[in-house]
Length: 476
Image 1 (cartoon, rainbow, N blue to C red):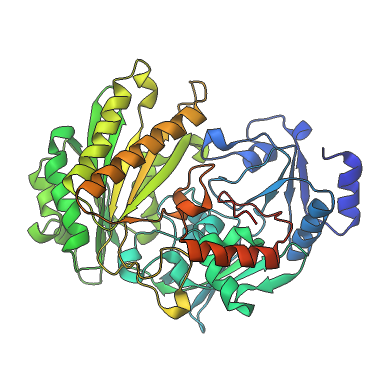
Image 2: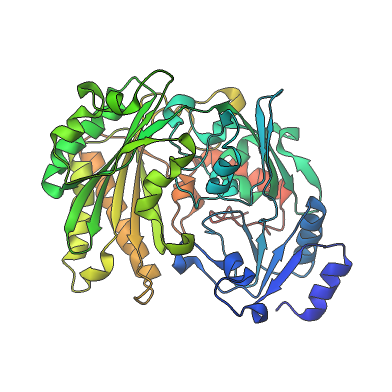
């Protein structure tokens, strides 16, 4: 229990940040609500106190106080707040720096903000960064959990763009991960397991003049034709400016539908819309006669809103559970497995509550995940240069009671169906993507055995009392 006496002790120890506690909550839009809101409603654990440090000194004081009194806590960066505690949330919202260093071609980011905030702050700049595809996604979790983004075909995973992480350790020290090469590697895929990140330095990349994106809606009977085309994006596409996502989702009052999200990075002197509609690019998408088309040309900063319109809820609050399946390629039965899963959910007596259930197939070109010794992380597995990503989502409607555990069972069923289909086609199954974790998933699901052993060694070195537990728990 976090008593008032303990909080006085915290402030006397040098903590000058904000302290929020539930009795202050009066209005839905107040600081408490904003600090405890989650993207997935089922993740919220009703914490007693929220600590918002303003400096690394505040962060250090908070960590030492939490450790001393053995108070359970979770670190919240700027986004979906998957990591939760029923005692204390350490909210990094004051760490919202975005500084472009032109001489070094680097951008310094605070972890406590969403990618919407980062893109907005970089709007006047000639550069951008490898960031999230959904506006509510947070900087800290994204840049430690892998980092799939619209520019992955061109530059690789977003974690590959990270130059260094500043973090506060369990003993209160502030270090840069680069001081220990093994730690620097571990941060790219398992970062919040070793300390609280307070600053991230990333490579600046040239900002595309424009992008082409949006979504095209099709009836389910077009799935086979769409699937064949999306499969080719991972096996035959050689243009890194082209990528695409195919979704199969349950639409209220419309049944199961298919949604294609084409994405093209524009270049100077080219009309992205004209390029998109070439037969060898996405011209086939219009030949299949979509029933709805929102695609168009956007400034790069607005690219996050393209997919966002499918996934967001008012105030940035969704009610989602997400997991994933990673494969070396796609095949017809893999697409069919996702569609059959949604159909089976709809056929249940309570099928109405599964409106919004979605399976997304994200195709990346060959070699997109290749890493160098300098950018090596703990995910994807060593030697893995191509990963095709499937995310499985269940929307939990705010008007219906929670079914988090049941939903998790359904989602694992979908993943197993997809894996069974992949095995039948001889498709390699790859360790799961850390940012698509389902609460309670074991670390073995994400990391190879030898990698996990190295993570445990680092855990014993930097967090021997195991006070930092991200959504993926590394037990020692």
